[in-house]
Each structure stands twice: as structure tokens, then as C-alpha cells.
Image (cartoon, rainbow, N blue to C red; front, side, top):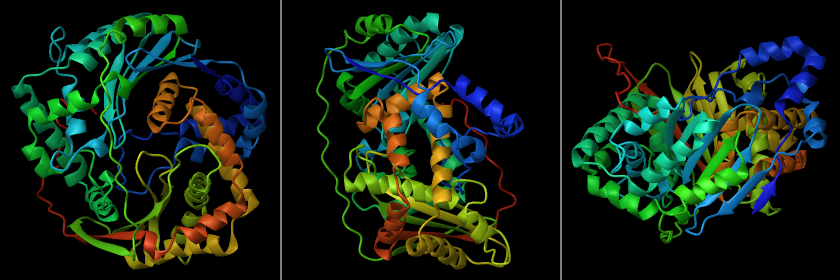
Length: 509
């Protein structure tokens, strides 16, 4: 059994901030917004919490998190059938989060069935032999809880947040659904229409989402990351109930899943309940995953995409290494340095891209953004995006974005910039883990990626160690034409008679 400790409670940080600048902290916290879970890359990203906290107070956090830790055990064990159980007690409130993570997502689909992982997520709410369709959600609500599910390229997850005293009921429900999900073909056909409408609403009615979908398909040749999570519409049209059942039987096996419980719980109690409800499920082998190596790119790729839109838009995607582990290997160090570079470019109000491209006489863009895909089971991208301002072109924005990276490659970054983004990252991690839901989510995500339980603490330490020279080095090595795909949205006239779609009834998220 593994046991680890987690970061300092946020109440200590609140006290520390209070002594430093109460007005700044309260104002900043009031303005925070939560990013939608399934936000697509259709526009420059809103800055995350760690990018928007008052940086002058956050400079104090480095020492705080390093020296004021309080014991809070995280324990992990594996049942006889291979299912992983991770428990994170947090006694501050009488609530608990129960999550089931399955290491299967859109990247595990095969051509012709894109979208099946997401469709199956919807079908998991359609009942078992003992729980009728729709009853799962009603029962969780009756317990005073909330629930939902999510699908990504890498994994599928299901969660319930309930009063801690009702944990056993949701564990029983989830274990039954995981092992005995079933549905009539008629239910599948109805839910498939919901998913298709979801695709129309979130992708086909959103020109930038369509552009990024086309961009991914152009960037990747062999990687299954080229397929959209929601699926191609032609595949959804042809998808059958048998396709979803086969995917379910193949991947929803105990050894390919983890149960994460965080909150006001006892480790021994969770272990007992896990054995009672999940431990009795029969063991089955996890299918072998064949490697799909992305071939080396030779030369710049360029995509022009036409769609009804009010403004042009440009997106630059550079192939970069992902963080595979937290060891000292060069590719892992590069992934961390690229993440710091993205923060230097776009990590706070008035960062380099915003100052250079959206302000002053040299303004060429209304908005800009930078992001590094740090972690994932597949290959990752460093993205630069921008919306040309009035009278400017997508080409001008593209050149200006690349010029800012070239400036870092030539001149490096200031130590003050480096300190600022590092302290904001630390603050983000500590703030994030004040929520039991986020604690469970981080533990599950780390498990999917094959990272250790204390990956977040290790990640902070590795990011703190990134040097200005490392940031300059990655800016020199990863931003040439042989890593780059450019997609430009060419605006077409809007159809003013078109009726705006509303979210479909029955959509899970």
C-alpha cells in the first residue's frame, strides 16, 4: 500500500494573504471564473486561476508550500481483479467525491467508429438489470449528490459528489453500472441523436472549433489524436449499438480502471467497500495496445479553412514532446521548459504576447494566446493563436506570434518573468487542491498518465528548477517549419436567417 502527503491547507494561505493584502486578494478571487470542463480550442483560452492571482502576494507561496506542509495521507491499493483504488481523506467538510476512471478514450477507437468512447459514456446512464434507464441520476440526486461524466482522448470518467455518509450507496451503483451496463437498441438510437446534436452545437456551429478539428487531422498522420472526441459525423451516422457494446466489453475491465475517493472518509472503510462492490467483479485481461508512432514531419503544413464568421483567426501548432515521467530525461525537461515558455508568453495580464500584439501602435491582434500540451497519452502540441484586429491580416498575426518566440530564442527571458510564472503555478496547484473534487480529479488524471501519486508535488519542484537557459533552448529547437502546422480561418458571410441551436435535452455535459 502506498502512502503520501499532500500540500498545505488553503486556510493557512488565506491567513498569509490577509496579512499581505486583503483588498487585492478579495478582488482577485471575486473575479475568478471556472473554465468549462470541455472547453474546446476555438478561441484564445481564458487565463487559468494560476495566471490571474495577484502575483506580488504569490511570491510568498514558494516558501509556504515548501515548509508548512501538514500530513494528509493518500493511499493506493490494488484489488485481486486488478482494479486500482486511491483514497485521499480530507476531513474539513462532511462530503466525499467518488470517481471511476477508465483508461480508455477517443485515442483507443478504430477508424470508422470515432466517437464511440463518448457515446458509450452517455449509454452508461441507460441502466442495468437492477437500475432502470435514468434511475442512476435520480438516485444520486435523492442522496443529496450531483454526478456527471466526461470523455477525453485519453480517458473516460464518472463521478458523484455526495454527503460522506452516502458513499456506500454510490459505490454500489457505480460498480453495478461498470460491470453490468445494458440498454435496448431503441435507447441507443435516441442517445445517438443527442450526441449528433451535441456535435452540431459545439463543433459544426463553431467555426473555430471546426478549424481546430481540421488542424488536428492535418497535424497528425498516424496518431489517433487526429480524430475528434465527439467523432466524425459520418462515423456517428453509421455507429451501431453493437459497436458500443463491443467497445464496452473490450475496455471496461477492472485492471483498466481506478476508483478514486476523496473527502471525509476513512481509508479502511473505503478499502472494505471497494472489496465488497468492486472486488467481486471478475478479472479480465486488458487488451494489448499497439504503438502508433507519429512519423517525422518534413516541411511546414498549411491549411486554409472557410466558414461563416465575423473575424479571421489563425492557429499555429508545433509538435513538441510530452511529459512522460518526472525523471531527468531530456524530453521531460523540455516539456516542462515549454510549459514555462507558454506562461512567459501568455501567463498573466500584460504578458509578452498581449503587450506586443494587442497594445500600442504596433497592434495587429484583438486577442492572442499560447498554450503547451504538457501531459497526455499521445503526442502534444504547443499552440499559438490570434484574432487579427481591424485592417490586419492573419499572416501579420502569424508572423508576429512567431517573432515573439524568436525573440525568446535570441534574447532569452528575464529572471523576474521566470519567478513570476513559477510562483503563479505553485499558487494554482495549491488553490486547486483545496477542493476535494479537484484532489480526486488530479489523482485520477495522474493514474491515467502512469504518474505517481505525488506527481503534482514533484511537478511543482521540477517546474521551480526550470532555468532561463532551458526556456531559451526550447525556443530555439522546437519552433521551426518542420514542427509547424498553420491553420487560418477565412471568414465567409454569415447566414442571418439561421436559427441558433440550443443544447439537446438529455446531454450529459
